[in-house]
Amino acid sequence: MTPPLYEVRDLVCSYQGKKVLGIERLDIAADGPTAFVGHNGSGKSTLFRALAFLLKPESGSLTFLGRPTEGHEELLRRDVTMLLQDPYLLRRSVFENVAYGLRARGERRGIEDRVAEVLEMVGLSADFAGREWYQLSGGESRRVTLASRLVLRTKALLLDEPTANVDEENGFLIAEAVKNAWLRWGVVPLVASHDLPWLDEVTDRRVHMKRGRIVEAEVETDFLL
Ligand SMILES: Nc1ncnc2c1ncn2[C@@H]1O[C@H](COP(=O)(O)OP(=O)(O)OP(=O)(O)O)[C@@H](O)[C@H]1O
Ligand SMILES: [Mg+2]
Image 1 (spheres, rainbow, N blue to C red):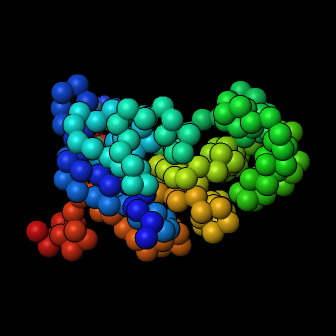
Image 2 (cartoon, rainbow, N blue to C red):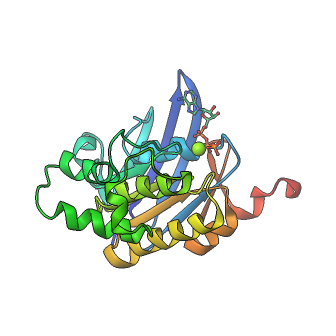
């Protein structure tokens, strides 16, 4: 049996001494996408930063595919990538934006084909590769930032609000790309979003968060409390 993607144990994260995340126990499965939902400030982005090894937890432990992560964060950043809640493009062409991460990882061969493949995956035709960063609509820019993460074919892909401020058509294309990353390559998507109908398209597996904690779906709705 394959181990979980992550096992989170007694994880505490704080900013300037203020605790914002306290998760006793959470296993995140490796056999498909998982959605993370919760109100503004419930800790989704903070958890994602810890899972992407961008934020050092104050205490607690994480395993990744069954292995302890402490002390191996640098190497593990090759297996995990995160699309930030406010992604931005480099002031370069679409091609250079998507190729950037591959080059940074020392890849030299097949870059053009791999860029073309992920542009196609996010529903952008090949001629977008030659566009400059300022020659795109908001939805297209968002899909280019997604392509720049997809191209890395990491084991885990963390997407923080990937459809904020995009219309339905772009949201559909983003959902298709996320599902295909899993179906074609086995990249495990973790997605934080407030867009529940959109999440339904991607996965029915949900982790509910409230005030920095994991809560059961049944107690998440305020009117039941
Ligand atoms: N860099 C930071 N410095 C200080 N406090 C922060 C920082 N980032 C987040 N916080 C605080 O941590 C808490 C959790 O925030 P976080 O961004 O993780 O929530 P979220 O669930 O992603 O919210 P949203 O749905 O609005 O994106 C909030 O109280 C927030 O104010
Ligand atoms: Mg957030």
